[in-house]
Length: 158
Image 1: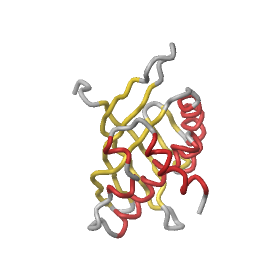
Image 2: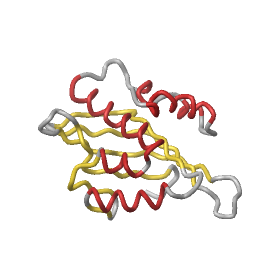
Image 3: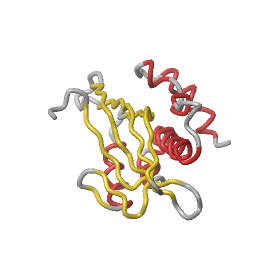
Image 4: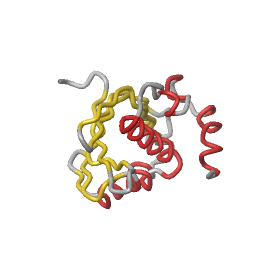
């Protein structure tokens, strides 16, 4: 088991996160989620967990070559944008799935996120919450990679 997987739960205990984000992502997955839905939700959680230690590398690792997020297209463009985001000292992003649905070779997960945005002047980070949607595609090797990711902040105009 990688050292990060062992140390992350302890690090999360001391991170100033909301209680719902303090427990491991996979603990939010209902036992009734089976098959493809469970496999994609576990990939979603592995992605979330790894993003805490590797940042942009996790975004690239779990993205399909042609993944899209907002205006970003392709694994390398997404990784480059995330490298800028995660390079800000104090930046954190946590998420976990609350719903998942299989549609052929795809599984769509949706859930809650919490983002800590550092204050450039050194004050307390702004903490914002929202919902996300990620589309996962079954790969030839049986794994899932995300092909589309997006979301919105709570209270955002509809």
